[in-house]
Each structure stands twice: as structure tokens, then as C-alpha cells.
Length: 134
Image 1: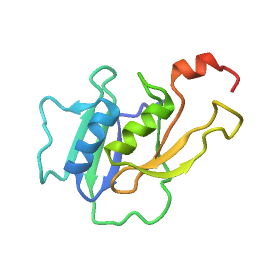
Image 2: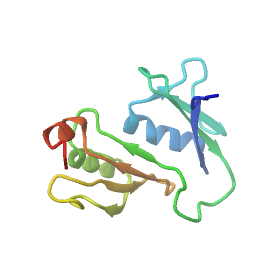
Image 3: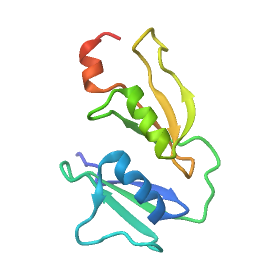
């Protein structure tokens, strides 16, 4: 028996604002038949190519500890370091910098979105191809 992930759900305080923040980070768009609007308590965004969906669900709870589940993002067009700078300029905050953890050109960076949800930025496919064993 197997299943597939239909969507990933992110609990948050403001579903609309967080969905709008994540759209340019991931390159996702609103669902064509269900556009997100201010005040919506459930806002979904979707990858236009893969159809992978992320649902932002408004909840009253505060985030109190480290995420048990998080996104690991691999840049599509930039290097890891370039992507980190772009996402920081977009409003993310730095949580931990693990670049070079296993030597030059290795590692990842942990960031947080405006509501404190942590995610990592990994090296791009091109960086991995240039240093396959690092």
C-alpha cells in the first residue's frame, strides 16, 4: 500500500499574507479556480509545472518550538549563496549558517519566514554537479 503527498500544510496566523510571501520564493501561483484573497483562512499555492500544492491554514496557536517538518529548497537558477541573499532581502531571517560544514562548497543555510517557520536553502544542482562528493 502506498500514498502520495497531496499537499503540504503550513499552520500560520495570516494565511493570505504568508501564501503571498512564499509565492515568489517557490515560483508558485494561486490555484486558478480559487484565488487567495485577504481574510481567507485557507490559501493554497501551486507549482505550475509539477502541480505540488502548499496550503496555508490560519490557526490561533503560536509557534513555540523548532519545526518538526520543514522545506529544504534547492535553487533552480541561482547558487545557494545567491538564493540566500535574495530570500533574506525578501524578508526571511537567518537562523543558522552551515555553509562549509564539511569543507569549502558544502553545507546549507537555515532561514525563517515572517512567521518563524524554518526552512533550509541547499546547494543548487549545478553546484552539486561541480562538486559531486562535497
